[in-house]
Length: 143
Image (cartoon, rainbow, N blue to C red; front, side, top):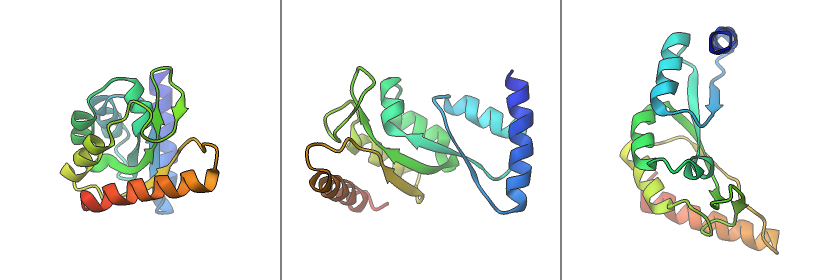
């Protein structure tokens, strides 16, 4: 099954590369497994999409994972989850955002972000609160 995945992803990567399109994979796989898979595919346009909420539920070491993924991280989903694997308001879950952003700074991350948050009672107020929260972290860690 894994070989079929590698073969199909190799085909997609080759076609995408021809059109200068990067492929971003969001997965719970370990950095070691991702890097090994990327070597098998041997295409320069495959990167990792790091979802901090999904990774937090795995109780993995953010700092170590981000360091090991390194320049393979091309995009980040900013999300918080609780121990029941439910998306929650930013700051109400398991993600230590200061440690997370500190790890991104360590690898000199310059990719993009998407905020994936619960809306709360007032979607506009929550959106503004999330934007300000993450803007401050981006400024603090100079990302």
